[in-house]
Length: 372
Image (cartoon, rainbow, N blue to C red; front, side):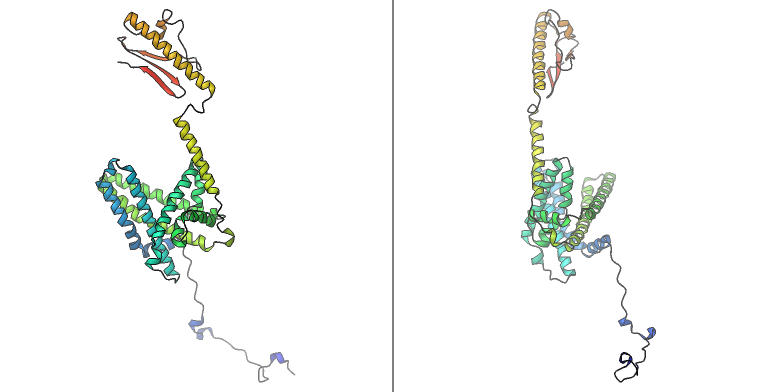
């Protein structure tokens, strides 16, 4: 008697089924997976698919800037604050417009509805401007602390520009969320930052070479405009894909905590910068007591020498060729620098009718008289 496991439904042993590969339908065969595109290939695809839109977004404010620059006092250095304001507006409009277009493209690729009303919102312009202003303020403050803190903030804030448009966050929240995205993945982002720096440096070098070759002012401006039209959307598209990748892999454990270490770091930088500027304006504030005493002695010596020179001139009707001539009738001894024990610098005109006396203070060079 056969085992039940070897019987079919009718009690007979089922025959083996032989499949002929040549008669199998091609529809049932798995298709080979498409090769994964590199990041740069994706950038080029986005760039060419949206080339007209991206170029138009840049072209309108850029053309206005070029005309304003060529035809206004800005080129001659007048109305400089207005020029900075216009460049800032240009930067905000370009960044907001390009990111909005890329965000719309991304929504369309993922099947989400993308309308102009939901993508181009006025509130996003102000948030984008806030990211640029606040981010620049914080990064600059970091650079005041011997550069490295500035590089630290530049790394962690490099994706913040996309957050107001893509996630609707405010300026400060965007900066802190960008930091949360990148935290723990710094080694993955640094090569991209270096790549973008190399591309920008190469573009700058090419444009400088070309503009120096032609040497025509209006043509130079046109070439710079063309370079911006090409490179700006390319770089923003590049970092937009990096932003999408980091946001896609964003873990719940990396939620923005609201801690403001970056703000304290920046405030420290600005305090250092303020102290440096204040010291430069008031160089004697942090000088040692000995330095102050030395300068006081130098000023006294200068007054004594000047009085002796004037008495000598009243008697002889000319100034001496050297200070040693004043001994012993006008000065018992010639004063020297109290710190370096060197004579003060004295020059007399050939006709003896003018002189120049100089001494080096800790705060700078001090001279009296004028050679004629």
